[in-house]
Length: 221
Image 1 (cartoon, rainbow, N blue to C red):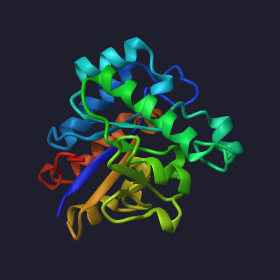
Image 2 (image 1 turned 180 degrees about the horizontal axis):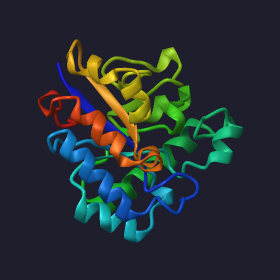
Image 3 (image 1 turned 90 degrees about the vertical axis):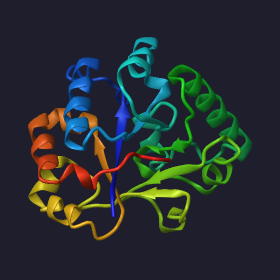
């Protein structure tokens, strides 16, 4: 049994807070990589929030599997749409074109295939799910907010609270490290790098130190 790691929100979401810099991301990456035995993790990149500097930094400094975390993670639109990336009036064709264009551009920028779609807020609708493969995605991530119908085996990469999804300090308090190191089943541990920086990376280091790095494996999607 193994743990794969997923990280959301690179370089940030709708608004970059002062502490969410490339330098602090690199420190997060170092702490995480050390704690998981330098296994590759899945990183959710928001292409619409990336500058050229962000993309060059990622390509040159971070060895990870890149996924596409929506297109721009516009919080106002997400709230207006009940968490959905796409408005209800958009056709499947509209969504397909948007996803394909952003995925292709992101692939070119990071120099690796982008095969995992990571819907913001873990919310996905039927039209989006229906065009993912045409857009070039083989898998999509899901989480606590995802509706049951979308948890499709073989396609959905799922994490759930309280032991697989959240902040490291909360999971430590919930004894998630005890559950995870028992290795009862394969899991995907989902972190948000921005959340971890906000609370202080010492919590992440402590949490990961409680789990043998032999429990972790490369993210292979």
